[in-house]
Length: 369
Image (cartoon, rainbow, N blue to C red; front, side, top):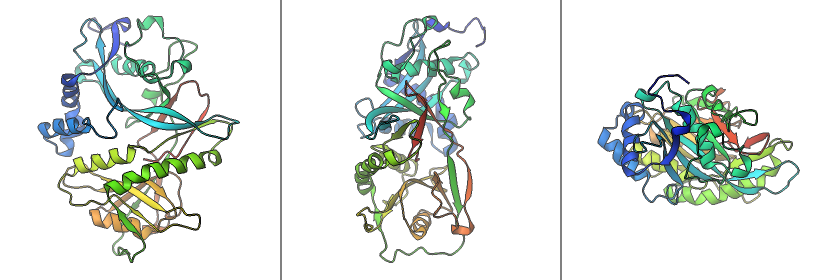
């Protein structure tokens, strides 16, 4: 940390839950970085943020909370801020055969206003956030040098996850605790992405092979997909590590909501495709969103979840329907690799990372979008 005289000492810093006015301030703070480049006027961006925090399935009952780092003597002024999204999860310790239900949080919208940068506020906010979300049984003692622990704590997470646009070095340095009993913060979990660029021509007709999924249809699949994760986790990954999975409950709806907010004039009610049942009674399907840097122009179809086998023709039809030329999939599924002249495989630039609270070595499974 720097030694500027205006830097607030560590023991005077704490985390607060942002009130309505502070939430608006966080949106104003990151509008130039995340709203303006995508073509959102400031008023539209603020209204979008309010709708995101309304009584949606993914935001009610503390499922979506905005937090701020403040000086205890001046708690109305935000030095940095972030958001948490609560998600149901599974953990499967070594030697166990049945996954346990657990809670995790996704850390998002981590932001430090430019005037406060270079003072260590962002890093310390995230170090404190471990003690806001983490299960106390899995945390080291709160460091005395940090003063009193945050007054408001959720305290039920066995692990938390974060997706970084700046690599992993900073977030792994936001350690859990301080001193010899501390552990790394959010550690990168290597993940590949597969990208296809649509070639001219190719099949786009349904021919009765699949049904389109609307928003409600897609949300209904959250429970089915969660049960598949529960059934499949014991047969996945490294049994010598604690295997973990984030369940898709409310996640699908969140991404669909973001799509509808990002492209309000897009006429499509379609967010996936589902096929007839296979010999085991499982229906292959995939659910997607579309992203872009401007409200009028989605450019990439991002597949959130895919239960294979899904014919590439269905994926292509969805891309053509939305007017996009690029398809992106997270993970190691190779069944489409020869399509569109060949897939491009690279390490995930979103750098999915995980901090665990007393679980030991972990293996993150079903790390979908």
